[in-house]
Amino acid sequence: MNILIAEDNQIIQMLYSELMSSWGYDFDMASNGIEAVEFAQKNNGKYGFCLMDVEMPKMNGIEATKIIRRTTNYFPIVACSTNNNYKKACLNAGMDDFALKPYLPDDLFAKINELSIFRSK
Image (cartoon, rainbow, N blue to C red; front, side, top):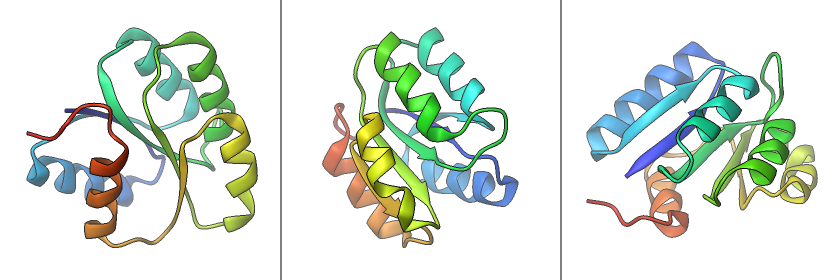
């Protein structure tokens, strides 16, 4: 399965990279909302799941999701934030779920398998 990850924090990017690789997922890493939109549009129909950080430079995850929902085929998007106050705005923007950081790897793995449109290997 291919996963789109939008995360600006390099340490969290490294953590996600290690987790996705150990779980056997292919993934693309975007460092901001603009890159996330570009990946989604360029690879339309490729992704089975997306982790979308809310607070990112250049374009936040809420705005990126609004564009992705208007311009690409559907794939589940889960918002990731340390601020629970974003939950309503994320769901209103078209995200499928909201994950409050930090979360356990087992919880993330379960969420990916619960919501992905493609089944794991």
